[in-house]
Length: 626
Image (cartoon, rainbow, N blue to C red; front, side):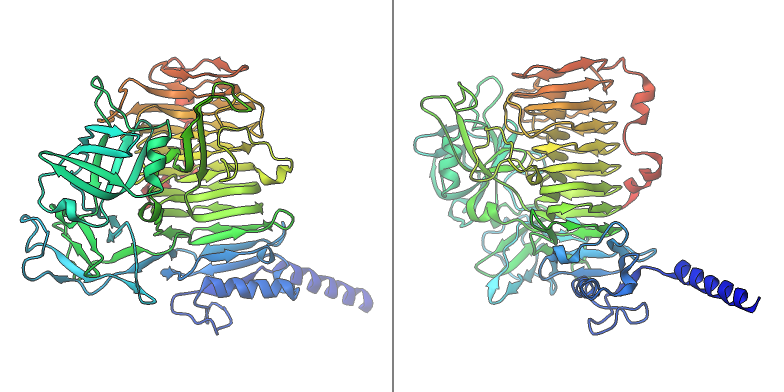
């Protein structure tokens, strides 16, 4: 009887032990120290060192990690000096994931920005500054890193983006007079502001159908009320040689619109700023509610805040982010090499029109292009079973979150994207710099692809506000992507875009799903748009039960009637479109391939379908997050 009692006691103790086994918790707080053990009472100071501790626990097979590792991040701002890098050695397992998460009730910020302090009201007359701004601007020493002036293209005052000084304010733009493709020069109406033509670093932003270009101005010749502009290389040649989208000349719809930027002579209203490289200072005219002695002023410093990167044979797996705010990234290529995109922000590295048309995939093709990809605040490649849940992305100069290649079974759920300069969420290979962008992509090793990614219940607004040709969600050569129950609004161009390549040829894309999304208030600046947009053959793909409404009236559209709720562009094939609600049956089917099925799309779709689109009830509150 005693033996039986002892066995029962041992069993009870063993059961209790297993019930109380918990995942390893590593705490991080701004007031912590990386020499601390990472307990709740003695937290570490940086996520990078907490991640190293977790890595060592796994390497040494610490039994505490049996049910996973939680890196619990306390409230506050964590300013990164380099991107957080997550390697294959940081991988978890299905039963023991690595989770980087906010502490209960906390909103930790992972920042790629840098504070600017020491603001003072400018004294005396400032050379070049318009009369309206004299005596009203404040200045601060520009950040210097390792003896070099920090370059940046964005400035944030209390999390509100300021406007880089430009010659036309608000949504006002001028029109080019002509473009000479042989000399690579452009005539414009000359601004009336004195001295603008002598400024170093001047830029031109030009509107071209479905994309903008950012061109660094090399020379200005003023003749009467007009000015002849020349541009730096490489963008000068690419801008004048590539056929689409190109500068537009039309008496009927107006020439391409443009504005000039980055000159102190244009700083003529509150909310505008200028980086004076010679004086190494920032000049800013505060808005009425801003006191530069007390506000938080931030400039972006890093291009990437986090990178999750494995190899094709050793991917990063079972790593998740929960409740993290990612803020402030920069992107300097426009300042260093200009920016001439082909579409969706993919910038041209080389492009020209073939004198004799024809490529291996398309007999009549005359457009050749090789592209690069904008950086993202968070980039992932060669990963599987990773995810982001209720994270927030804001104040990005380029892309927000990008699953680049070699990914599978990943999730983006309940996240918000606000004030993103480029595309909010991007996924899949588009074209590598060595691969001509109109050729069908179908790698021999399918592990190169982005497969089985779910993007669900995300709120995307005020994105692509720097590069107007970018979109809300952009997917390239993807397989089995599931984009469902997201809400997208306040976009300058299109909403959800899936596909790349402009080809009817069967390629890597297939079995993609775009379901029950709400897309509205788009086409704010560009036309030739679609709330839902596809390219190329995608067998087995379905676009269903989405709600698309309110196309905005872009004031400088080259063809103001060329807007659509659903847009199947070149090569789109083998796609089913069913039960999608929109205000009218305004659809584009441009050079489509075979096998597309249209079934019950337009204003007659049942209200029940319209009402189910967008964020589900459990996620509707994320719209209120600021």
